Image 1 (cartoon, helix red, strand yellow):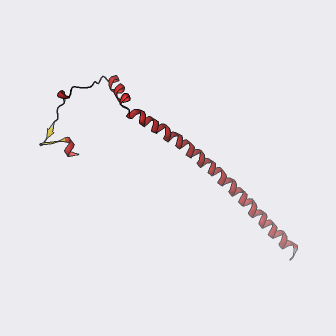
Image 2: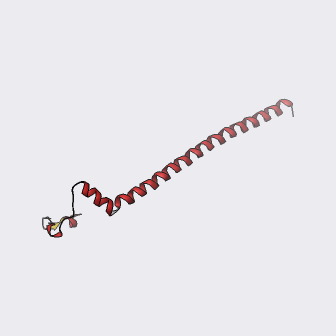
Image 3: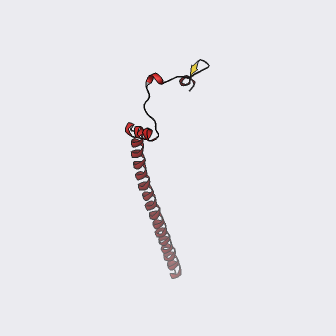
Length: 92
């Protein structure tokens, strides 16, 4: 083989290695970014689950209702309004 072909083959090989290295770094940055995103979303999910549990608790609902001036009514004061002979529960 002529020396020029050897130099050309080695040059192409080195260029290939350099391109692979750049691609490897890009992929590494992307993986790190995705892992950070997963961590953030996991923490946010945990917070939202905690908030949901808190807001669904009867104590929280009772205190929020009291802040709005609402109170528990006597069941005898509840009136069901019928429309066309059907109550609203049957319409949904």
